[in-house]
Length: 371
Image 1: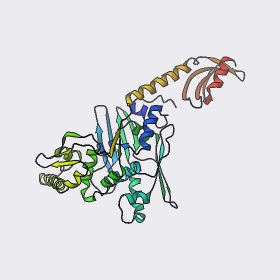
Image 2 (image 1 turned 135 degrees about the horizontal axis):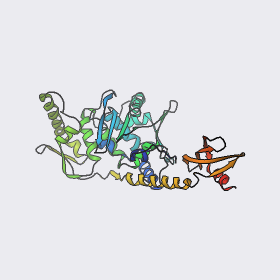
Image 3 (image 1 turned 90 degrees about the vertical axis):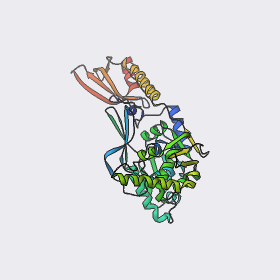
Image 4 (image 1 turned 120 degrees about the vertical axis):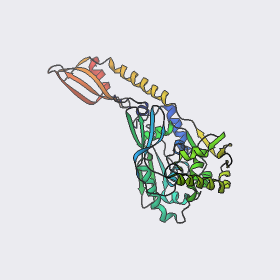
């Protein structure tokens, strides 16, 4: 693990792309990615708008999808339910995943034809390019985590590898994104249920968004008010009073006309109370708990402190090399895997300080101890 002196925020510390996972973090991630879990916050935090059409456009100001007193998470571009369909297929219904590396990064294997077929396109072959464009939209959309003065940018999807001849498609989930998955509540939606959600018609995109939101939460006897969803999905929030009311009335009618669809997902609509209820969890949905980010941050700091204190005893020590005496000033970029570091040294003969990059710490110990 490489030491980074500039890090301050918990997010910067824990979601460092190059950091090796702790064993329990690795287990949590492996179980999630192997069993088709993805980050429940994708559906809880309105990453995807309740529409099914529209070009990807950059927000003038990144759209805040979650915030508390210390942290905000925002998104750079507008995405909709078609993007959500593809994301759910990638994680819940792919053609396989690779075993995560030490930093958590892994590959998702699929094909554009397979995704297009799952999405219900009449001609999957001719729709492959459309799917690729949706994937590219997500690869070029930033998640922006702001914690105090620290800002971290991450993408929803990492690098892609496409083979035109075989029509195979691989997405690399980078180390930082993999760590976010380990530290988020994971949701697993059965393949059959996921297809049922995907095949909700485009004209009912608002219902699809509401269903995804409710299924990504635990059941509740209290239900959700329509006013909550009006605010959550910005329905009837802009324009003149008449147009606002019209947008809200349109959703009410859509919900009433599609009660049968809602019931298929154990969701009921009560027009009198203007509420939606999800009282009994579907057996084909399961959740996996997140890692405790605060505790992992403490473990990282503890291990780095232990790592640093181990080498502090060598600071100020002198050794002779090629007839020249050197004094150890400091260590940086300590790599415990290769047992190397950048060592700042003072040439005592001429009083000049230099850095021996990637030097062997075993050799240093030998020089100091006269071995």
